[in-house]
Length: 244
Image (cartoon, rainbow, N blue to C red; front, side, top):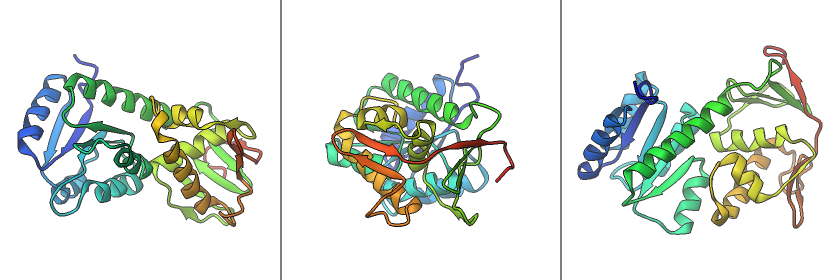
């Protein structure tokens, strides 16, 4: 049996001439593939089903892929790989900024896409699993539950957080008071060559600051180290599950 036998993929693309052959290829590789020609059909499918990963076209009639991606990441916490004919660096940056796990430019080699799918899923599974029994993070009164991907402020209010913001915050919490340069953050958060996307890290840091800093223009928790990168200026405790 293929190692992908139980992995379900939702393929969302309005171009049937690409979607259907790709679905057939992924099925032959052992994945379970569901197809949707637009965002509306994808949303309908997601009401009762939760795939392991979504392959998502950006340019579609009606709701576009960027809008759907925000919903998938913030509400469904699903890994997303963009499929797009737009290969400019700025287009890739936009896709990664909103939290997509990877960005593949059409036309692409199907074998490369399968390799990227496996890489994203390995990364997602690694991040979903607690590394020790005391899996909760506590810092400056804030709490992050990595199992539920739930961030709570010092008053106990749950703060919505995207998958990209979760990965970035987890990287800082695993390395408190250490300077993490952009290349290292990209490697930990995106897990691939991303030297063109320094700006994506900067923008994700800015978004995370707006959620956890008292004043994002004068950050006290996530500090900029000029010429070096960023540092979480807080002590971090690990708490048993349920202790918050």
